[in-house]
Length: 190
Image (cartoon, rainbow, N blue to C red):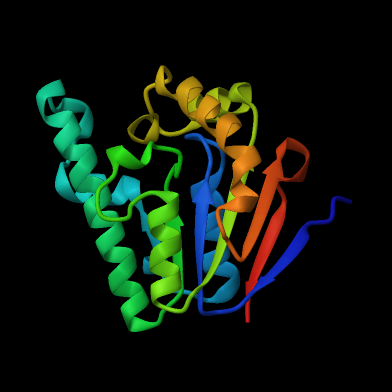
């Protein structure tokens, strides 16, 4: 029988998820919520922020796409900061691979780390280092409304390859890398 790794983190943590679309980030976020008896609102999802701003992001024109991206991550960072101000657990569910200049107000990895430091949170980064092929297959298995444009997945997988060697130097309290053969992980908040 397969045994899962158990990672123990302080309850006063921000868990930032990082990886290409369809790598399993939202699935892990949901499992952390259920395992630790958290409210579903502990997960701050850039996908949900995007939907809160624009009901159907696929229906907007290219002229509004950049503004939607900017506004999505502004809302994402603001929501995370507001939760930290309240002292509650935060799971930041997003790709976390976009270039910093694309994201205003701390919606990137470095910005999230700064928010955690400013609010005295333990900062854990969970990285999904899964293959492009796995991401593409899992994307096709998603319900239609959650599928992402497959053209963007290879770009973000490449951004992860570029980021991986640098992650330990970014200053996170803990970096956990989940590879194809180590995707079963349980996170306990104490």
